[in-house]
Each structure stands twice: as structure tokens, then as C-alpha cells.
Length: 117
Image (cartoon, rainbow, N blue to C red; front, side, top):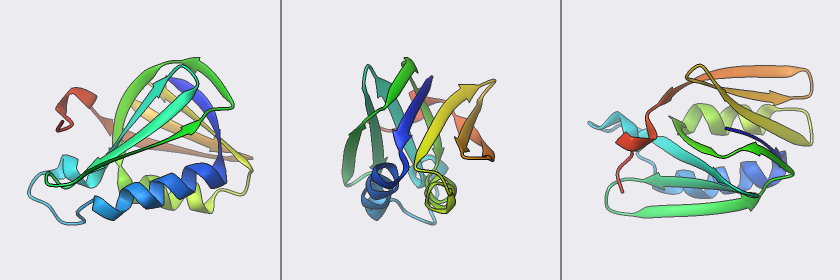
């Protein structure tokens, strides 16, 4: 999975999807986002098991389609703090690598098959 997105658009949809995320939950995966890349779109899904939200943005460049689950708070905080106009997302060896300008972050991921539908 690899794509490049506009940082401001990405931060905006993360903030919208985060509205349904529970900060403290008995089920840790409900404090995460499901990120799914399909062709030229990045989909962000969030849930608290009662309400589901899906937001999408266009990607600037997509090299590989795929899906990953990542902690919502950490992802949102990192994207908001990046100095560059674009963010590159890449899944490599079970880690989501976020790159913006000279900054690079590696986030632990969960299996997308475990995300509640």
C-alpha cells in the first residue's frame, strides 16, 4: 500500500472520522481508523460499534492499493503536525510509514480483517 495525499485534506477527514472514535474502549480496534486505498481514492473508516463513518479523499499518486488499521489519535496528531503540503503513506513490514517533508514516522498497524464492519 502506497499513496500521496494533500495534508490539509487528509487532516480534515481524519478529524471528521475521529468524532465517532472512542478514546477508552474495551475493544482496542475501535480507537483506530481503517485506511483503505482503492485506485485514486483513500478511504478512512471509524466506528464506535454503534455509529460508522467513512470519509474519502483523492490521492495525488497511488502506487499500490491496500488496507491497514492504525491508531486514530496518533495518526491525526502526526498528520496535523507535519510541515509539508503532502503526506506519503506506505505500508512496509507491518508498519505504516508517514513521510512529509523531512519528517518520517512509523506507526504500528493491526490487521484490517479485524476491523468491525
